[in-house]
Length: 171
Image (cartoon, rainbow, N blue to C red; front, side):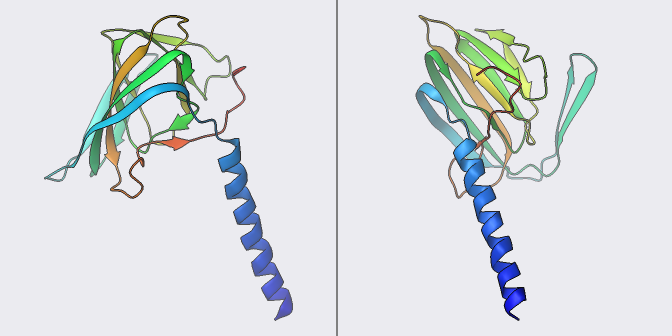
């Protein structure tokens, strides 16, 4: 009985340490001037969302029985960034002002993809870890993000999960 209890407490302790260390290694944003949630709503009817994106081959992003949608305006000051993070579902991003530098955790070369004011792109979400940076030294970056397939709150910011740096970029 004592060994079983010790093993249970040992496993519980290991789980707690792992969760705490992940939180401590997360890379929160810096220089984010505002991140206003403009609207949030649940789909009135069952909704199946699919995006097909052609870049280096067709990527299909599928969110069956999508839950809630969240719209957010984000302003990042010069030199600021979102921190490494992921989303539960796909995200449509519109760059309203400035230039957004996007880096993926899956790219071993840490290649920058730049999106300019007036351009839009889709982040597939579903655990894809990435960072958005404002590499300007003078101009703010403003973007509008529409998050799909967000579970109902709590917490209210459940459309984003901070992540540790994947180690493929020097920042």
